[in-house]
Length: 94
Image 1 (spheres, one colour):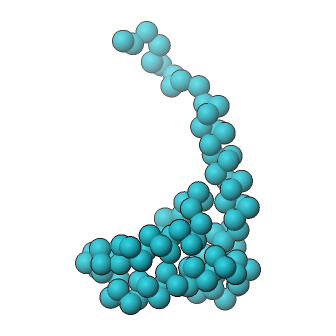
Image 2 (spheres, helix red, strand yellow; image 1 turned 60 degrees about the vertical axis):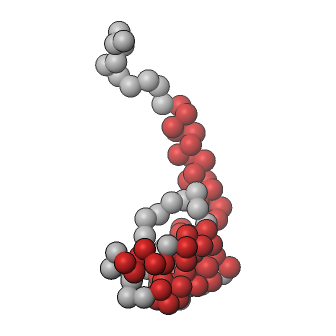
């Protein structure tokens, strides 16, 4: 699973459930029940972000479930993107 700090684990769980058939078809899961079970665990971690057992089972660190940390990362990235100037070496093109 790719990490997107702007999305909560709950939102990721919803996305997984909606794409269960595609994930099975791509060979990434054995069946849709497996996808739903994983989505349930991710959603449970959203409700209990301090659960080390869920984090371990999912193979994620505490940062994944830390809503405040994800928001800080998202803001930092957004601010850094806005503060970047134009690409170097493109003056005079056009």
